[in-house]
Image (cartoon, rainbow over all chains, first blue to last red; front, side, top):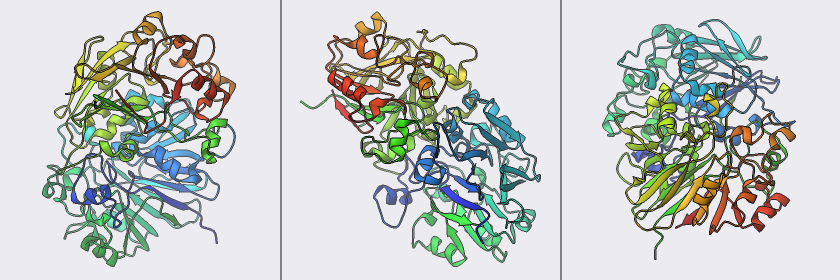
Length: 305
Length: 305
């Protein structure tokens, strides 16, 4: 049987990409030096398609132009103006997930699906008027209500613990908000396909979230940092992963431990920060997660459901 | 004698780049098909450096991450966080010139130089708070007043006819504004170097502008469209070049005619739209401008002054 739904990883890195423009941490240095144990990665986005050839992007990364050039199925096919990309779904209003909207201007009709909180964050920035509202329809999606971004793909947004976007934080430092500012996406081929789940940002794995994700056919989950204090320890910044809205992979309260014992057919870490040793083939951390059945996503990987 | 100043073309295409994500016009189709008469181009930006190794970007294009990865002199050299890029100068607030600022986040001190009109356009968008004001200093530059974006490079902004950014147009359709919303940049090695001029957007060549640019050692000038009605004729959009704030290259009122007879040592078209036949080696239009002494800029070209 043909797959009813295809998921392609456009960008598997966190904000900044890998390597990051201004970073010479040990892991970035490998990329700058062309070490064969690492591959470069663009910023966080996937593309989803059913059988009909239209694609929905989940998140629009700053690297979107390069990502579309690197993925021929997403390129125009006929006529003067054309694109198989007809929808964008957003999981939050972080820069690595929305800046690429500015690359989707140029008079092409799109539908933009997001929660009220995310649409309001965009609307507060007049620069996004570049996506002419007469061509790019904003559709507010309620948590838990199914929708079809393209005809033959069904999705549902669900809340995950997170925080406001960095640029919109103000004095707020809460990272346990579940009000739709950060969501996960359940997706499947329309009708009867198996469900996959995409969660590129998540501050904690609650019992409710674990119950929701147990049994999924494919989990793509936040792999930003391996260790919660990774940025501090490397001298890259003052914040823990948790403070940035990202649960660590390792440790007794990390995602690796949280999902141990869950029946998940395939699982892949996405949204991987440039500092994360998971990016290095053969590192102890990489061996540990692979031994637990996790893939470390790369740009261009494709999954069939 | 060593050059006192180096100019590197990071991106030679107009907004959307070449090819453009949703375009199959005749010129884009050559790129999608891998035709050897064309080369791909990223969006509009140059980098300028003196002898000391620091770089100032003029404009920050949406393709900035790819541009920094493609240009080793602009990559980090030492320590944990580092970049030779310490300044950004903006010529207007168009998306192809400012969206890349969002790629320069990640806790790196920069100085951002622009006119009051351009800084106000940025300030109206909270998303640019991602460039923390305690690290990224905004410096308002008055027209005609020299400044040093990096120690050993001198610049001056001058008005050129233009318009408000597309996303900030409202009902305004004037393209003859010279209030600092669109500027050109004069630049040289500090002290005594020859002057170069960078004008990636310009709606008309006035007598005053021609007098200013005549005699420059290097002119990089707006080559968006070859013909004023190019977009309309190809069915790509309803606007003339003039309406978009860009003088055409060809025709009796185009830039080629306007600068004929000016003593300009080197001259190169930049900010070239995906529809422009100048992008095709051997096209009649390309032969015409080359016969008149113009280069058609490519990404990675470098000029010494």
